[in-house]
Image 1 (cartoon, helix red, strand yellow):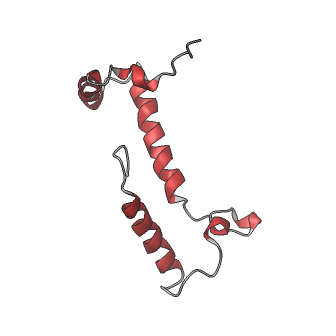
Image 2 (cartoon, rainbow, N blue to C red):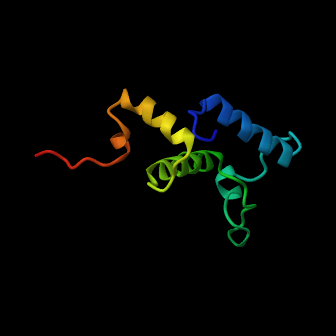
Length: 97
C-alpha cells in the first residue's frame, strides 16, 4: 500500500483476511464500522485499512515536502514529477478570480 496506488481489490482482500480471521470465516458478528472504534466505545480497535492506506500516502508527501530530506528516492521523484510540472503539484495554488 505505502506510496504506490493500491487497487481496490487488494484493499478488499486485506479487509476480508482480517475479518475472516477475526470471526473464523463465519461472517461478521458486529458491524465493521463499530469494530474500528476504541474499546470504551464498544469497538475492537480494528485497523481501518482505507484510512491507514491514506495516512501512509500522506506521510510520503510530508517527507517529500521536507527540505531537510535528501533521500535518493526524492531525487528520483523530482525527475518523474518534472513531467507533471515539478513538485509544485503538492502545493495548493491560490484560486484565480
